Length: 491
Image (cartoon, rainbow, N blue to C red; front, side, top):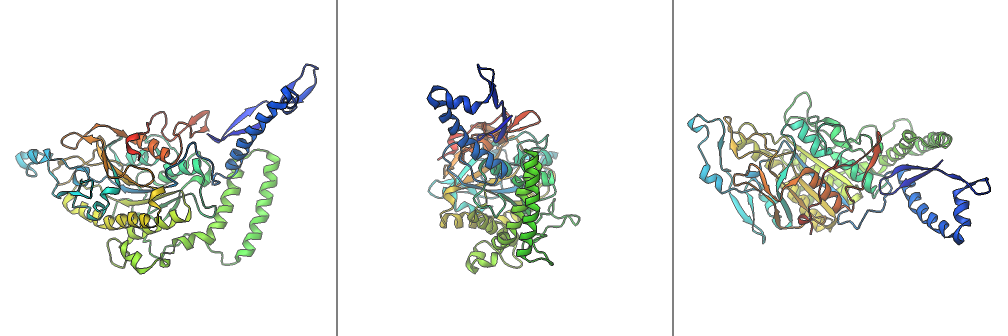
């Protein structure tokens, strides 16, 4: 049996490697192609081998960069995940009709009343995009933003919605978005993981949010720090990013040279076993992961060391003892450094925007923690020429309705909410789609989560229908059997 690999899917294709000729003798297909039609068949076979060799190398090490399906607009993604659900009608989706329906909280004994945002919306930039005073620093980048006002998804409970936002599925264990990107593209730096997630939380599926499921292990996200899981839990305290270090990065007994010799011995034994087995995906993954782990010891701490940045840069991000922006400021600056170093997918997590109680207090606090760092990241990427080929995505797993509940909070709304993109080929300075006059439900140019994922992959040069992985007898993909590339979002 011959073993070939398809570069569009990196999946095995088993083909028969022998045939019986008219003389009744057993020969190889290669001999047949060489002898027939002046050998033109062999030329075609060599062309196929070129692609298959590349695919085989990619399978042995999924971090090796591979050719995209078509020219890419973006080389990497930074996903700013505002877990819990920012309110669209208080940030990027101004609804003047709410003023007419506006009621005093708890009036007439009602438990849910339409309530206009307490924050003023103003026209920003040359585009005149309406953005509330809740996010004044991000608002200065209005002309860079591609605001999607018509997002919708399938579930209004946090655990399921968070999983779907991060993996495409709320019901099954599936690879995360970052893992699919690494699997489809490889990465630009073999000494760093292809996918890094900063401040991940325990809530909403825990490690499943950045897991690789059935994809190769090296495609999974490397977690840095840890958020609390619900904003203020003593059981799962947040990990400060100041002076954080990854565990198991130093060996008290062996220096780097001795560790390299030790690893070479283990790797040689693993490769001997792999040669005997012929095919052993678990062992191949172990070989690749061990090599990456060793290389990370040298480069990862250097990238994470924010002291390499100037004081002015750190202040721009809001980094400083006692500042509410310090944690996310460090995360956003670290994201820029990882992007610059060649990491393919970086996720910055912040929670918990789930303001069922007193949104007038909760949302300003979340905005204060994130507004300056996110705006600084956009400024920094732009100044360094990185925004052009870096796709920045901002948003939560769903939004919040235009209703105020009995606790002066807003509940969950998965039928219509807002996310925005910037850079990486996204069309700047536009609004795409709209909700109804109250901001409750997406109506015009609706964008489902699967459509967003399909469009993101398209900007990375990947066809979401061709990026597949065969598992349990089926070809899986990030968008399952759904998804449409929204051309109106692309510059």
